[in-house]
Image (cartoon, rainbow, N blue to C red):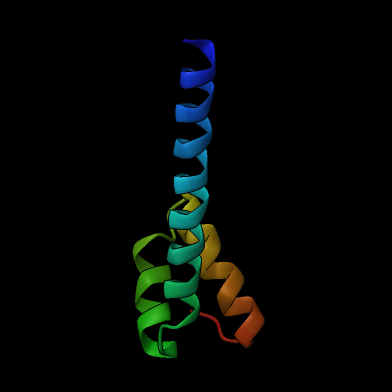
Length: 65
């Protein structure tokens, strides 16, 4: 029982990591205008994690709102 539950939790964690990687890749693939739109939506403080990802990618591209 414990092994089954541990495997289920590990599978769920792996799925969450893969999904987060897809989200980060999607943000990185946005055009500058779309990235600015996303950042504008999530600019309120405290910024949610997706806003942090958008602002980090903006910094990488050297663009700002």
